[in-house]
Amino acid sequence: MTFNQWVRQAHRWLAILFTLTVIANFVAMAVGTPPMWIVYSPLPPLFLMLLSGLYMFFLPYMRKAKEQGR
Image (tube, rainbow, N blue to C red):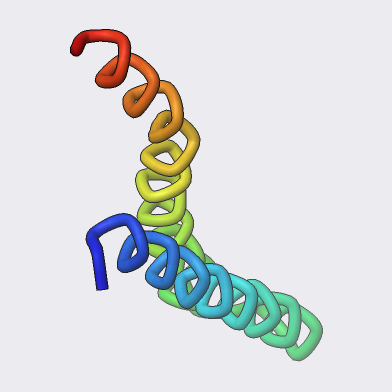
């Protein structure tokens, strides 16, 4: 598995984790006042998805610049 494939796979799993934490947030809010660790639990996967998403977004541009540099 190449690094690019690993980043894409990690991004997919982080999206699933993020979705689950957001659902847990809504459930906890429906029950009552949620603890702070539930409220802030979506932020770490969201930050990691931001990094992997930006990497995947700029990957074609980096590849194009590398080809033109030859």
